[in-house]
Structure formats: structure tokens, C-alpha cells
Length: 401
Image (cartoon, rainbow, N blue to C red):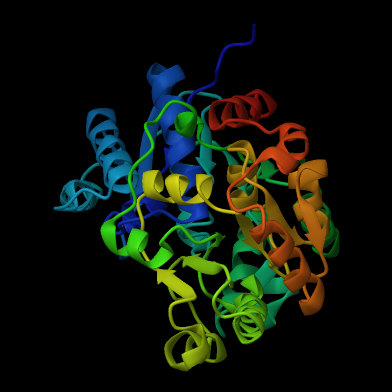
């Protein structure tokens, strides 16, 4: 069996998110790689990060391990006090005096979060100082291909990230064949030939053996035994919350007493004024749409397991973690008929055009009549096959070798 090479894992993203109460999708990826390397290659793994002012430095493994464990606890159980944030401050101060030095031959600098790739000179200097080879994960090129769904400055910033990767990376990891096709197309336009490996993201295995967490009282009171659906993700235009809110208004107009509940789990993002107007000011949606901006993972799992299904009407995605997570728990899913979600969900999900409001309305009512009864969906969701994070990272490490 081939020996695991030495790794220099960049955890800048995790440090920057140390005050967050819940993780984003990219946070989960970086955390999964950190956990795997600590568990399976601790002797071959060192950690590094970029200070917010643009200085790259090293992190001793003991401190990195404590920080990662604190972050797992903070995100998994939403503990008070933000223990990871306190450790983050100590780590950031240490980055100034733990400067990069030459690593063992064959060491791989691994960046799986896009973080600070907008600073190519700093990245280049760090690679020269350490002598490490560079492997980067590109999650998607949505800001470049679909700038209308991004913050105004983000397309230009993502162009810089891609050019940094094109200049310094020895290999690229992507989470789907859809992203691989887009990355290869852009690399060809830049006249660059870099190996691109597809490794599907994993899902957390904890829901298989974690005790179901009771929903808080206010959420239970709102649901009151009614059928409900869950939509997971930041509230932003490409997630297509607007379609769901208009569908829900129609459902309420038709039958207010029997309309299901929509639970939106995710923070408020950007360029979303129309969506927020409906959430904040539409009388018809009061009591029928619940917004939860911050829930611990265990409560989200409980919410999904008791739901009539996951709703995922996005226009474009790089992977689709909510879909994979829901299907792995046997939760029915209605999602957009776009290539990447078909790649993730296979035959286990139901697909609808993200512009076809009437079709979404009909499907939602059909699923609502079943409530949380999984009988009619068991065969469909049982066909789902995905990787757990342990398997996903192990596959990436194997490809890197």
C-alpha cells in the first residue's frame, strides 16, 4: 500500500468562521478534511493558515486539534461561549512568529476552501518557502458563469482565484462531474493543463447513531402536527426561494386550513430584497412559512426526519449537500431538474423544472398528503448511494497520491 504523503492543510476558512454558530457547505468540507487527516495521518499532517492581514504562518498540531474539536462542538450542538473563537485569537497571534519553512520532500499543500486564493503573491511566496506541491479544491465557478447570482465584486474575485489555481496548482479536486466540465473549459481558455479529479462530497454519518434531538418549543408550537417541508440554504437568488414563497401563497389562498408549513433554514444572504419582502410583509404567509436562521445540525436532522420532504429548487449548484444529506436519511426530496442535482440524487429524488411553479405546487400537495409517512418513498430513497465524509476524503487522498 502506498504511503500517505506529508500534508500541509490550510485551515484559514475554519479560523475565519470561528464565531459562526452554524457551518456553511464549504466549512463542512474543510472540517471533514481536517478531521480525517488528524485521525488517519496525524504524523504526516501539519497545519497552516493566513492571518487576516495577509501573513501565512504555521499552526502547531496540538492547538489545531483543540481548535477543530471546539469547532465541531460549537457547530454540532450550538454551545454557548464560542470556544473556537477564543482559540482562533491565539492561533492568529501565533501565525506571526511561526513562519513557514522548508517541508519534507513531497509535502502537499492542500487548500479545500478557496480561501485567500485572491492573494496570488502570498500563495506563491508560501509555496516557494515550503517547497510544497499545491492541490486545490474548486467548489464551483458559479460567480464566473452566473455573475447575476453573486455579489457585485465576487465574479472578479473568483477570476483571480481561478488564475491563482491555474498558476500554482499541481492538481485540482472538484465535487462533481458538472464542475469538472466547467473547470476544464476555463482552464483550456487559459491554455493550462492541470489534472482535475472528481470526488463527490460526503455526508455526515452521525445521524445514523445520534439520538434525535427534540425541536424547541416555539418550533413545535408553529408546526402543531401539521405536514411541513424543509428548505436548507442561504437565502439568495440562485436558491430560488422566491418560487417557493409564491407557491406557498397560492397554497394558502386555495386552502388555508390544510396548507402545509414551509420551514426555511438558512441565513439571509444578498440581492434578495423581493424574497425578504415576502418573508417580512406578506400577510398570507404568516403562520405558514417559518424562517430559522441558525439551527444546530442535530436539530436540522430532527426537522428533516419529521418532514414531508426536502425542497431544493436551485437554479445552479456545484454539488448539493442538502440533497445528499436528506436522501441519506431516507427523507424524500423534490429538487430542480439540473444536471448536478441529478448527478447527486440519481433515481432517489424527484426532479422538477425550477421555473415550473404549477408543477412544484402539485408535487408539494401530493407529498403533503403523505405527511412524514415514508412508505411510498422507501424504495425510491433506498436506491440512494453516496459517500460518507470518511470515504470521500480517503478517495481524495488516494487520488492525490
